[in-house]
Image 1 (tube, rainbow, N blue to C red):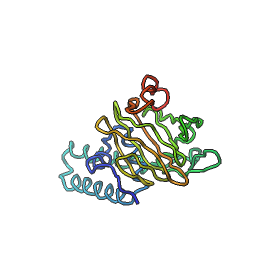
Image 2 (cartoon, helix red, strand yellow; image 1 turned 90 degrees about the vertical axis):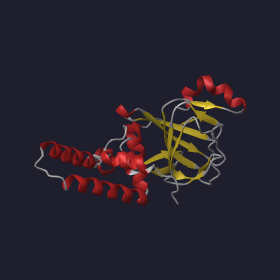
Image 3 (cartoon, rainbow, N blue to C red; image 1 turned 90 degrees about the horizontal axis):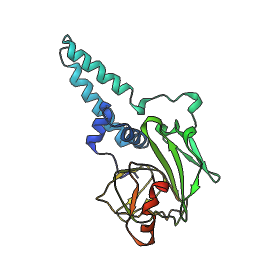
Image 4 (spheres, helix red, strand yellow; image 1 turned 135 degrees about the vertical axis):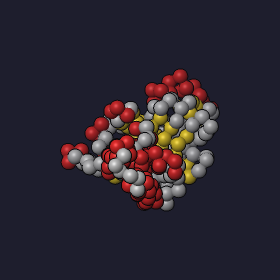
Length: 223
């Protein structure tokens, strides 16, 4: 069951086409998986369209605003049609296939090779083009990321499985944003592990044990 969603304010910005690209991609992928947020976006877009339609359209500036707004709505990533040549729907790790939300499928061909980080933790870098870089992270059962906080923001979407981090427990479809006010240690005890998609705009800062020795090099691994 999905329990963690984008804020309503972020859904409003997303629906209006005003989100910064990385957040828009994450919300789009979450909305692909979440019927509640799909319905919220439909209602937000309907309300926004209604507000413009009821205005006197003979006013040129309102005409322009209306058509610009409708153009943004129809161009949202959630509504994009994926070209056939980019229609890969899953990624694979060691014989396991993970189905991806529609918004992320276009990036399958831009996903690098998997590499083992520490213990039972795997990472595959994703080139998002102008948006920047992201990672698929996979935790095997018993895998964990050392306790850390953030110099910037970390956006995470659970693609498959479940994990906890000392703050909450997250299931498939859950979306979270962490910053320097959060200190957590993601770990999975699910039999099939956990796959997440994450965008981090600054390196992690480890806060406990010998992992603190990794801080000068964290940008090489957790980025």
